[in-house]
Image (cartoon, rainbow, N blue to C red; front, side, top):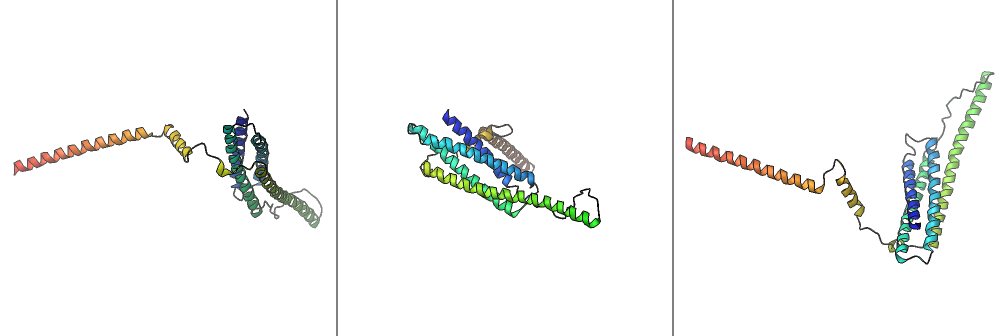
Length: 237
């Protein structure tokens, strides 16, 4: 039961970090907006919550001396996957910080707000510009504050990773993989071959054999016609 809980937590973390990476790639593009930045913040915070849950569960489990050799090896493998996932999350967070600094969300100052104020022309213009600048500064400050929060969260992730290594200390090169190299690709190929609209290896071989047989029949027919024509030429001559 504990092993399944750890796997479920790790699977959730992988999905959230993958979603975060997808969102990070859209920063500075045509889909970039305040809504995107808010979604980025929510997603990375969810990823950090799952990271803490994974860390606590795996740390407590790996420090249990009553674990069997097989169970310990399995949890160490999950620990390595978790560490790799955290490395990717930290990399994407740093990328989001760099892109956020490169492409800040600034509201154009030339945008005019219809305030409905009455009064002299100069007075209305001054008050309108004052309201406009307040809105612009507010949006800009939100953007800056989010980048500052992101920078602090990156430091927290670094500290958490360091603390993890100190408490558990599972070198990645000491953990053996459960599958041979390329096993995932072979599974994907087999799954793709068995799916509708694809041709399996056996079917492909049968098609090749049929093509060879058809080619042999055509060649024999052509050869027979050539012999008949040669005989006719000899008789006519």
